[in-house]
Image (cartoon, rainbow, N blue to C red; front, top):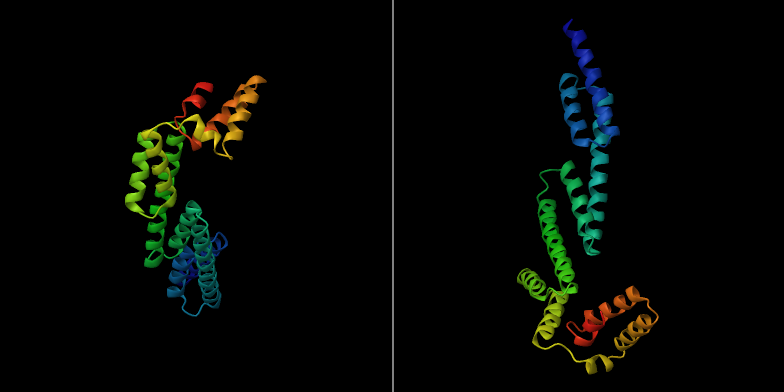
Length: 212
């Protein structure tokens, strides 16, 4: 009876391990296979499946690492975190990946803060926007986009730009004129969109604000 129970356990363990392997649950598959091999150290099928599982896990870790690094380099921080998380599911004690994920999570939080600050800037909430950009610069002093926006906000708060400044801007003045044309044609929403683009470059310009 004991031998029969042992054989049943071996078959059950192998089936479980195979199921885990097929679903890419490699650590769970290895854990079950180790139990099987303790019962039957010479079980060729179990040994072969363990080798296959270890190889598949190593391959997936390498692929996920490459994808995580590539995503991070492209600024796709959320995807990078997802790939690093997958690696840690397969290899929880990987200290290098743990540190890499923490670094990317920090950059992701920074990126989200920058996006919020830009949204506030576009809404004309310059003080709140400036505060967030300064927080970004406390973490990353070389963040060029944050520096540029702080400069824009400081200029806007110091003195609203005159219409003359817009007239002298060959890139922005056509947008202002296009807004006037659209308003005359009663395409008000499109006119507002033009003037909002003007305000992105020249916040608080009185003439543009009056048009809107």
